[in-house]
Length: 249
Ligand code: 13P
Image (cartoon, rainbow, N blue to C red; front, side):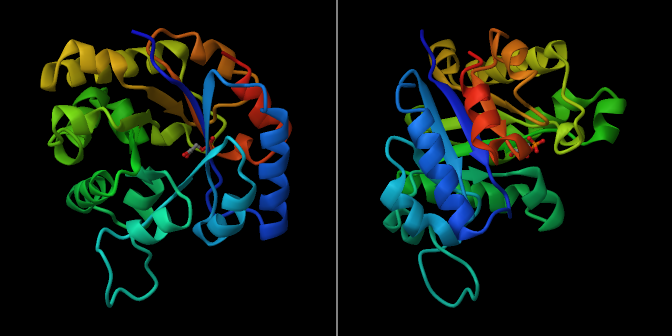
């Protein structure tokens, strides 16, 4: 089973519109011959409409949305609105949303359901904080995140999801997981998918690594048998580093 290789850029709350347009144009041009790696960009939602006009073969997603159809939810955007503006994917369960915005496993589950209902590709983020890693209970912790918010999906629905393992202690810290730590967790995640669904489905799901992944370490991370690509934060904000990560397979 050949899994999709994916490199996704999570721009978080960075860049102004002109920089964002330039970055998409540059990445699209540099990546025009890269057809064996799916490229996903998660810009600030406000820039979606402009980016949709120039995205070329790049896929564009949102970092957040609210899982209701419409109505009195001041400040929020719905999944159908973001779909209407060209998004094909959504990040769900990112640790910054869980921690800073107190998103619960229940809300994350509702978001997963809303995305699936509207045929938006789910990029489901999971990962443990430092205290959990230090107590060596990261497997239980991550498995529970998956059980609570993702593993209720049906066999056909789970196959529309990408899983991103992002240990919180590695995000924005320059402290990347070792290849052993990354491979161990990715292998466990695949095993849990196999337990909940079946081995064929587990083999088909792309599992991305995120957390200080950069042009220097992507090569060895992507060489791990169960690492199918990366979810890149800081290093996705410059064409050169992002493209060099994309070429690390
Ligand atoms: P960094 O690559 O900046 O560590 O961020 C990772 C991340 O949070 C991507 O979603």
